[in-house]
Image 1 (cartoon, rainbow, N blue to C red):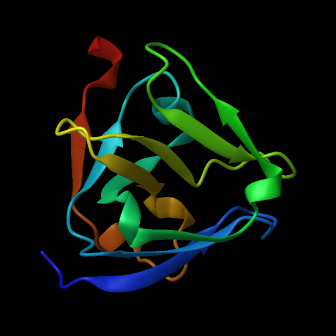
Image 2 (image 1 turned 90 degrees about the vertical axis):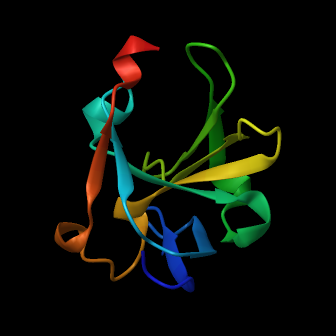
Length: 119
């Protein structure tokens, strides 16, 4: 696993921008109905390691299935660059779409498959 560093990221149009501090190791490739269609690759971080810099005013919340995860997407360009939820221990967590991070070589990452279709 790599050392923790701060990454910047956001949506396609730039209205949503954030920074997140994490050690970017293996990422999750989920096959649920949403992630599978969008090609999302996820890394999870405690909420206090995520800082929304701009775009709170353009984010739209989408809940589906068990209504536990707040899938936030930019209402201007439609990109979902992160989601908010709760970790198994009850703490607030952010699921970052690693494909939305600036200057990350996706091909260099280990992708672990997760069977979200079965949930």
